[in-house]
Image 1 (cartoon, rainbow, N blue to C red):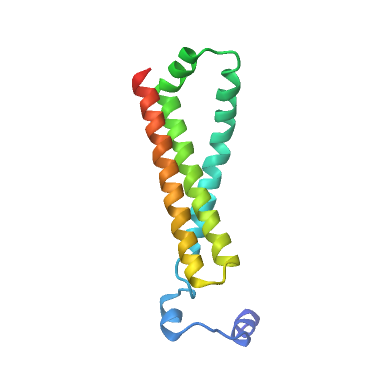
Image 2: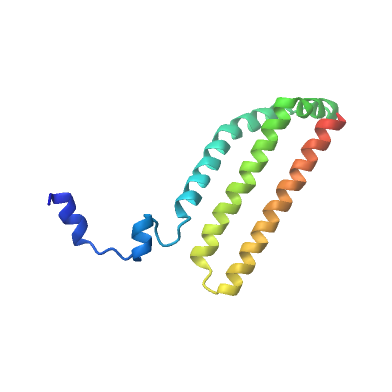
Length: 137
């Protein structure tokens, strides 16, 4: 047995036998949650400079110019991608905060539902507004 195996066997493994066989941790979904939060963060990091640049270009512009700019397919698609990444990232972040700091199970479930519905509603309302602007301009 080498040093790394000895160190590994010295630390206790608290997983169940089936968990050890499957290679899963206790929650089974933490890694997926972690990666989606990082993916949405990268998407937002790439889209925020475009959004800020677009908004700055609207300074002094009239309504027609703003509508025409947002009606361009690439702008509408990028704005929709920004909205989806934003609300998904917010939902994932709030989920972690609620799980970590709310210790009453009923309140935790209620808050998770409120956050989920608020994020879905916000995303749908934003996407509706984007489609409406893009199609009516």
